[in-house]
Structure formats: C-alpha cells, structure tokens
Image (cartoon, rainbow over all chains, first blue to last red; front, top):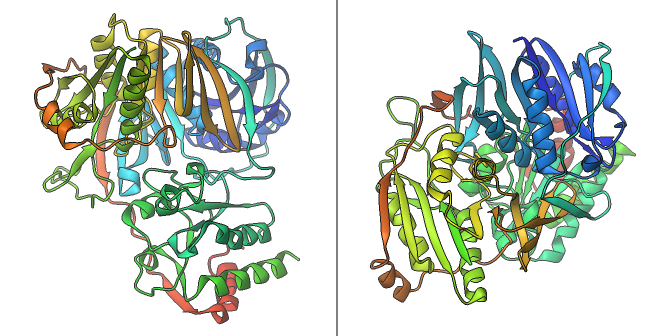
Length: 320
Length: 250
C-alpha cells in the first residue's frame, strides 16, 4: 500500500477514542498512515495518534465543523482524498462514520465495505471480511476501487501503541456549510456508555421479569467502574422496558466487547447474532437448557436475583 | 406529499444460514423472505405523512429478483399506492451499483421525500440511502428515530453514541429510518386484497459490474465449547477466578 487515509472523529474539540482503532487498522494495511479529522480548531488528543501508527495528523478546519456537518465534511474529505494516491480510506462504523462513509464513497464513485472486522492486502488489493446475516456468516470481499473505502466495526481493532511520532498539520478548508445541520445534541444520562463501544456489556432479557429490575444489572455495571454498559434483548425493548439504543441483536446493535454477560436471556438466534463476536461470553439463566449456554464460555445456572448481586459484590472487591 | 419508499427483500431474522455450494452466497432453498424490518418504518412513515397531508402518492421501489414483487405487495397491502421493481436476479455486492440504479429510477420524480430503512438486516450495508442522496444531490439524514416536518423543512432526531443528535434539513430530502420512529401497521385483509389490483411496474435493473468481488462466504468460527461453572450464587467465586486467570478479562 502506498498511503492510507484514516478518518478519525472528534466531539466538542476532543478526539474520540474510537480514532485509535481506525489508525491501528490503517497501519495494518501498510504504507504511510495519514489521520485526518474535521474540526473547528485544534483537536485535543489528536497529537497522540502518532503513538498508534499515524505518520501524519491532519486537522481540516472550518467553522462549519464545530458540530457534525455531513455535507461539508464529506466534501472536504473527498477533496482531500483526491489530492493524494490513497489506496484506502478508513472510517469507524459509528453513528457518524456510518453516515459519512457512503457520502464520501459516492462522491469518489467507489465501493464501500461497511462494518469490517478484518483488513488485509492480497496481491496489491484491499481484502476485507465483514459479518453478514448479523454475524451468522462472514463475507470476504476484494475491493477494486482506488481508493477502497471501509468502515470498521468498533471494538474489533484493538489499539496497538507503536512509539512513532506523527507530524501534525492544520489545514483550513473552504467548503460551504451543508444543508443538513445539527441543532443540538441531547446528551444521554451522565456517564452512560454506548453498548456498541463499551468494553463490557451486561444485557438483560425477559428473565428480569420487570423493567425496574434492570437496576440489578446497572449495579453490576457500576461495579466495573465505568467500563460497562447495560444492553437488552429484543423482547424487552419491544415490551418498552428499555430504549432501542440498548438493543443487542439482528435488529439492534452488534457488539464485540471483551466481556459479554447475558442475564435472563434465553439466546434466540437473532440475539446471538448481535453478540457472538464478543471475546468472552458469560450466561446467567435459570434454564440449564437455554440456547445461550451453547455460545457462552462460562455459564451459571440459577436465580439471577441471587447470582448477579453476588457477582457485583465480588467485582467490587477486585476493584476495591 | 409525493414519497418514494425504497425496499429490500431479505431473509427473515430467524433464518439459519446455509451456504451455497459455490461457497460465495446464501443457499436460499427453504429460506423465508420478508420485507426488511427497518424498511417497515419507512413505509409506515410515508403512509402517515401522506395521510396527514391529505393528498399525495406513496410509491414502493425495490431492486431484487422477481420474488421481490411479494415484498412490494407487502408495502402495497400496508397502503402504498403503486410499486416499481427494478428486477435483477442478484443484488449487487457493491451498494453503489444499487444506489445508481435506484437514483436513475427516482431522478426527476418530483419527490418530497425519499425514504429507506437505515440498513438491511442481511448485508448490513447501511449505505444505499445516503449514496442515492449524494447521486441526486439531495440533503440526507440517516437513522432517523423521530421526525417533525413543517413548511418545507424538517427536524429529525438520530441516535449517536451517548446522545441524540437533533438535525435540521430542507425538503426534498432522503431519510433513512430507525426503530422507534413509528409502529408499522400490519396489512389488513382488505389491504391485502386491494394490493393485488394496485399497479406494479417491473423493469430490468441497469447494473454495472461494481467494485466489490465476493471471495468467500463462510460460517463464523465456532466458539469453543463452554462450561457450566456451577449453580446459584455459590458458583460466583469460581466464575470470577476463571474470568481472571483463564479468560484474563478482569
């Protein structure tokens, strides 16, 4: 590979952590890695990207970039891409990346592979693997486009530090503000982690019996000290117990945390699809024949209302 | 309100995936196909907008094999006025090719809104909607979970990590719909009967070769056999020890 463009993200002038994963994946393709971020001014944390393999860190500045401006960002990134012989342009498959990557690919007239979990180069072409049918199969494809445009599933490309200083560069870009504008961002509850980005996900299903009982899972999440998010099965989201943002499964989010704890979830095929790429799966269920135990690395059979608080207490001891 | 709703025929989410003999695609023998669940929100939204405006047309457009007529009929049974099938035995692996064919069909159609589901539950591409917007030069908001339209402008809410983005845009626009936007209606018997008489235009899809070559479709690696650590809260110390020492995740 000659050069790879890693499109990274900021919010409110701070680099988003997912950016480390994008740069790590870009480095895996070989060649020089140029990290690029759209922002209104300097981005806190951008200078650290060198540690993860960025040879160059470019901040494209424009007043329109204070909040996400999809049209202006897409135009600035497409123009930047055309200035060099980039073999690939990488995005994170986040809410922003999923929105932005197709726009940039369409502007460049090249194919886009989304939600990629493996990247490589074979005979000079970018080859990627991506889960399809919600993880029930893996599709390996070769991209003919120059550049190949990819979006990467969060939590898959574990950031690797490489002591290598990347040179920073600020470039003001003149693009007109877009027609689609973000008026405000309503923040979720303070400290709430997104299930797709959390290192630990604790999901609850019908076994919780009623919405208020999710408190048990929230207490376990707190015991992990801010690294855990609480997810939910489709059944309880459809019942209105939990918001759709928390749903894990084929019609919700696909997650790949380090640790996934399924509580009171039987393990319908459409739920398994959303979490089977988790590194370690723990299942807690009263039915020893529940399908969830077939994909779980570790299972505990019994009453979740006795088991989960005990687990929370043990985790607290570790962190205390 | 003149609204186009773009649909995809996909395997039902309960489908057990069997890989075809060529090792590159799904063996669809015995597979139940449905209207993509995210597209149901798009159909429902289109119908509600037309009903609210009191006038207009909802056109269901799909790219797919002859059997996708049934998918379009589902939308017609829900209440869409007519359908267009861009027929192709295979749906391109490159979403940009699908987008080009749909954009060519919708160009100069005088649409107020063009709606898509935010993604298809088979290929997870989540790209055709915004690509069509780009090709037609229209503003686009993806993954819309709440929508207000008034006097040629719209305000949409979309979920982002750790929050909700409130987005303003002018009409006409391309929107992709997320769960939570509405509760899709079930087609009533009357609607199902009426759908049989509604116009459904079938024409060949104009597709280029695209920039994605499928190398292989494989089952995901099997997870190694797990173990039941024990029963009840007394199993917890052993579980925590395994998570620390064996799995090394704590």
